[in-house]
Length: 314
Ligand code: XIL
Image 1: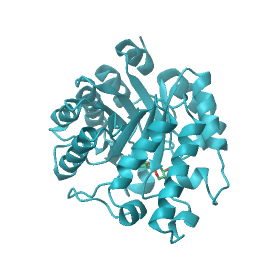
Image 2 (image 1 turned 90 degrees about the horizontal axis):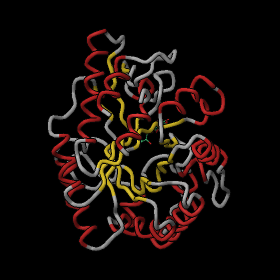
Image 3 (image 1 turned 120 degrees about the vertical axis):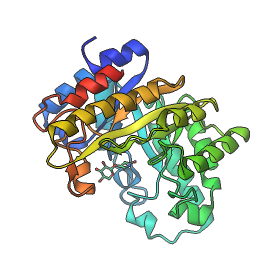
Image 4 (image 1 turned 30 degrees about the horizontal axis):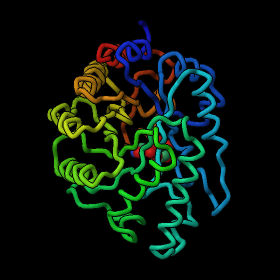
């Protein structure tokens, strides 16, 4: 095997990338690399609530459908992202002042509609995204504040009814280490499993800074795996303060290898998804001021040292 997907196929795991609709539809250098190297895709934005239902009852599936069709044509699986999140909600929903009972109905119908539309075409869903604060308390959100933590079990149950074969995940960031946030998620996961709620996996976003992978990452993923849950790295990138030095690019290569090994070294690791393909379109510079160069391909589609590191970790 000489590609990332070749190595991943050999191990029976996923190697994925988050895909933006704009490069997908306008940049053939991008799709060439995407289709050669990755056996899984995640919509970077196209399946989020604000994208699919910009005004109430009026749906726009165009970009999500494009990605799902592209994946089918290139023998790639699709990770669905994401059904219940505090962010990227349409304003009709955010500012609607709905009662708890109305919100419950709205959420169920959203999950039925979106999961139902892609039934059999999405192998795993990030059902709930970023539900926790850093200290392990529940993050304030439309859902948490109006419905309480029970919205999580309900969302998983509704998603399972809509597609019984999809693997259902809770996804978050800064849970890669053994810390207060991952402890709280671990306690919730145990409780949901004990209650028979259809939770199948935990997604570790893994937005890292170069040289700062948590030492406890593998053991932390292992404890979730020990509950019988799948674990996946869902949004890996390794940001570097710009301009990136040769030493930092070498450390980044090690970090990609270690992150991959930390997941694949755990029995129930389903795979690793990167939050992008190339530095050309990465969300990092727009979000982390002064940082960039976070992915294995540079702006001109040359493989960086991180590409080799990741290959060696697969
Ligand atoms: C980001 C996208 O990359 C950006 O294009 C968008 O403007 C904001 O969202 N955690 C997540 C992802 O779960 O959905 C986020 O994606 C990155 C952080």
